[in-house]
Image 1 (cartoon, rainbow, N blue to C red):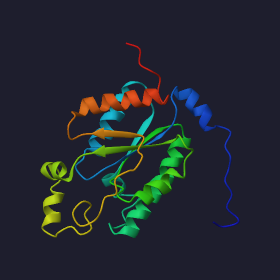
Image 2: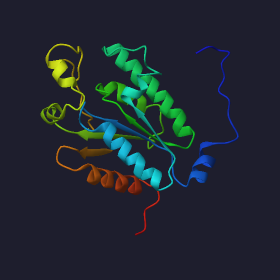
Image 3: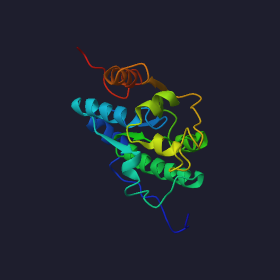
Image 4: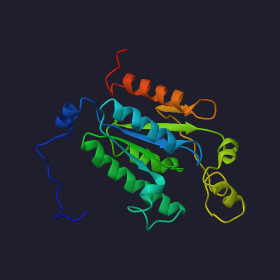
Length: 202
């Protein structure tokens, strides 16, 4: 860091933004194999949160690689840099009072832990989207597993590159045995219990 670069402290703070939003700002970090349902789940949850008046934004792995991280490949070093950039961007969004949701395979545990360290202890919520490699490959929505098996995609997580399962995620969502709406309901209940959003009174 250049010695001549200083952090500017604004008068409009995260606390003031959260009070205006009527919910707390958090980072929900969805991690899991390709095809496990990270993006589907993150966007479905965002829709439900939006309907409840929450300010949200989803950072989708493919979308980010169209712009912010378009210069990066899929080797270990580039994957680490990809996650670092998303972590820093997410930190700014949380400071802005927003519930940020990220949908990235993020296969390396150390990379996820490095992002966690950017945040206050309860601001980073790791969501492990659990589904077996067999289930993910049977879905193969984008045809990526087929290409990976054919050797057309190098460094493909679960095939030619490892995925390190989270050791102590705050939330585990089993998309292999549960429907999407049931998963979203479970996530909303978790966010209510963590006091991120107000409890819905029926």
